[in-house]
Amino acid sequence: MTEINLEQKEVLKAVFFILLAFISMFLVLVLFFYFSRKKIVQIEVEKKNIEIDNQKKILQNTIETQEEERKRIAQDLHDDISSKLNIVSLNTHLLRTPNLKDEELHDITQNIIELTKKALDNSRRIAHDLLPPVLEKFGLHAGIEELVFECNSSKSVAVEYLNSAKKESLESLSAGTQLHIFRILQELINNSLKHGKAKKITISLENFSNQIKLLYHDDGLGFNSNDTNVKSGIGMSNIASRVTIINGLSDIFTKPNEGFQFQLIFAYE
Ligand SMILES: Nc1ncnc2c1ncn2[C@@H]1O[C@H](COP(=O)(O)OP(=O)(O)O)[C@@H](O)[C@H]1O
Ligand SMILES: [Mg+2]
Image (tube, rainbow, N blue to C red; front, side, top):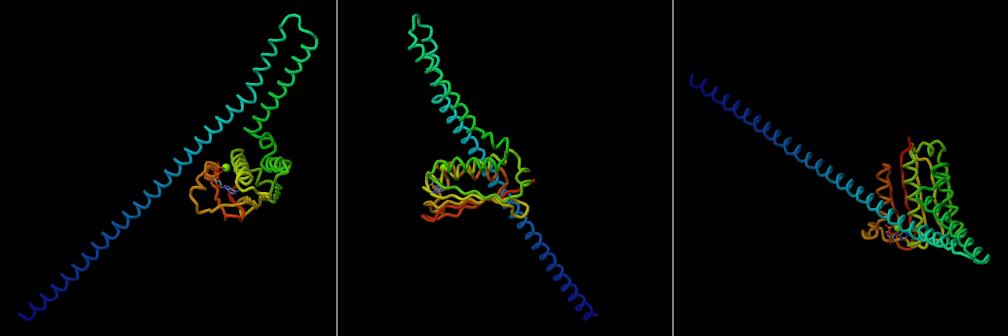
């Protein structure tokens, strides 16, 4: 009898310890899942915060660019149009002077004709800078061709442009995307001339799986790409903002005295 009781007790003890082991394992598992879930949530919150910070930076860059552009347009209007129209106005008033000699009349009208022509040319140039008409009428490829032609006619640099991307792929890009890519190229060219003192630039567009790849290369001075000060210039951060806006992926390869290369991959419809 006592032997059976002892055996039962042993069994009960064993069951108790097994249950205890299960409960502890269960608790450990619950705690493990709880903390790993917490960690995952924490990582996700950090990711979201980084995303929000990036969005804020993009917004700030966009506003800064807009302000810069407004300042430049205001200056252009003031220097190249208002000042000329002011002189036209003065000259027109002069026409009212009594007893003007033929020669004086000729000089004044000649002045008015020349100044109005200059003001017209300048207003056309300002409008062209704001939105290149060729881009709107004939699309990105024609826009780049015109940009390249303008650079090459300056004779200070040789720009080569190769386009093997399918026509439909370029035509399916929205007007906004085309303008972003065009502005990126304008900034890259400006930088190659201003900072890189480049003599040769190559630009290419090609299809890359279901996307378009833009390659840009100059043979200029390049820079140390690890230098954070260099990359944080307004021009380069504008490029980064435009790349984010079009959902593209970009990369820069450059070293001092080894030229500058930029690659951008973006999707089309
Ligand atoms: N193609 C290039 N060749 C050499 N240096 C460059 C080139 N592009 C950019 N840089 C460097 O990157 C810096 C930042 O360029 P950016 O953001 O366009 O500012 P900014 O042109 O107003 O100085 C430049 O000051 C220059 O040092
Ligand atoms: Mg720049």
